[in-house]
Image (cartoon, rainbow, N blue to C red; front, side, top):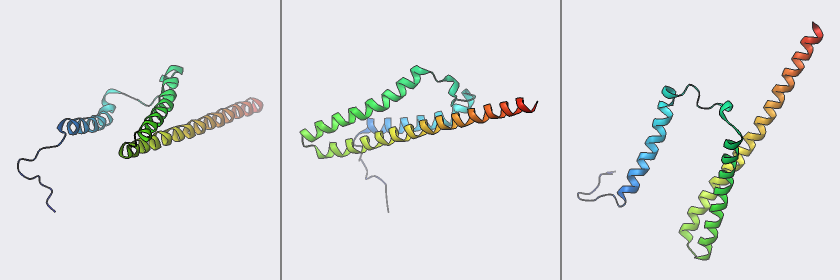
Length: 128
């Protein structure tokens, strides 16, 4: 197969192609170079209630926005846009479900750790 372009043919949307490559490369560069600038960029001690509030509301509001856009696509009989909205809504819901399960599991692990720590301290106090 020959994937070369015919002579004189350009990209249909060069700006879109440029930003697509730029954002993908930026994400990879941040991941690779983050070790140089941050000791631990995944740190729970930096989280606060405002960060948590913003994170969860953004998750929910983005799903609501996709639902609204889906309704407009249905009203206008735009099947191609409805397909895109359906994929985006599915991914948003998957994010909500996944992060909710992680949140519940993290709470359970913290509770187990706390109960084990308390039990070991109580037993060491009783033994001494």
